[in-house]
Amino acid sequence: WPSLGRIAASVAGAVPDAYTLGDGVGCVIAIAINIASSALTVCGFVLQKKANESPARCTIGDIKISTKWIVGVSVGIVLPIPAQVLAYSLAPMSLLTPLSGVSVALNMAFAPCFLGERLQRWPDVPACISILVGTLLTTLAGPRHNKQFNFGELMSLLGRATFLWALLALLFTVFGCIQYMRRRRTQLEHSAQARPDNPNIVEVILPALVAALCGCLTNISLKASGELMKGGAEFSNCAVWLLSAGVSALVQLNYVNRGLRLYLQTVFFPVYSALLVLTNTFYGLIFYNEYEDLLSEAGRCILFSIGIGFIVLG
Image 1 (cartoon, rainbow, N blue to C red):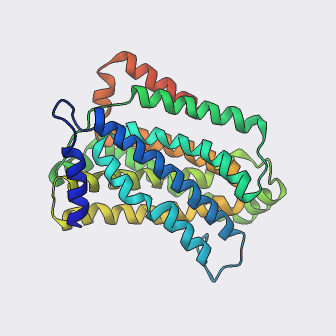
Image 2: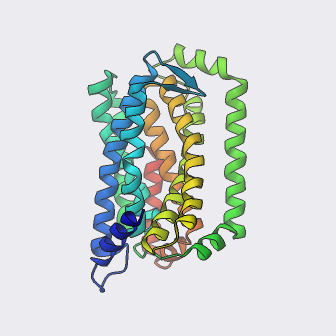
């Protein structure tokens, strides 16, 4: 545990005084780490997709437990966590999360090669280009100043009325989607089997949205953990946020696997990634007050909004 804190502190300390964390060198390091994590995530998705198509030792919810699935989770989730914690300690969340759009391009290369799925020129290629353009614009215009928080300040952010209302809307949406999928489980599975290449997009969005909303809570908690480790906080304080990340990550993982089980990865993954970008950006801006930096310059705010629009279009 102390080693993780020292790593974050040493990387942050390597940034010259002329830069604040999230600016200059720290920003470049965080972006590089985030792109590498995206590559691991796509590889993990491929392995989990293969696991969902193979016999399993046991099933928990929508997760088929097997050796291949365990390897996929290790590569796509466990390995990127330390890297994400470090990246979030160096740069604003709303700057880094749109970069996960890079994973859509990687998925277009990996899924056909390793899963044998057919890539469609329309709408897959235009959608990928749109998401990548949006990723570039949001990265160029996103917040650069990374505020530092201690445990007390993070708990104060958690108790703000603005975030609590947003959190309530999130939980209501997650609960509604889960209940709908439970009641219509058989119909949804039959529909996915009947239209494998062209599924009902609303039905694809259901598990993707639940996974993305839980994923944004996971990333908020991971960033909080990174901030605390960087500041040398006690383990008990960091454990609160790591536990929170673990709980939301379990729900996220379940519905990611549901989406992979029902739909082609070339269909499900771009939808999930785009929703994850939007939810991470929106809730990151609200929770960490990053919108204050963004709104300080009208031009950057407009460019950032256009970038988000391209991602939504994709």
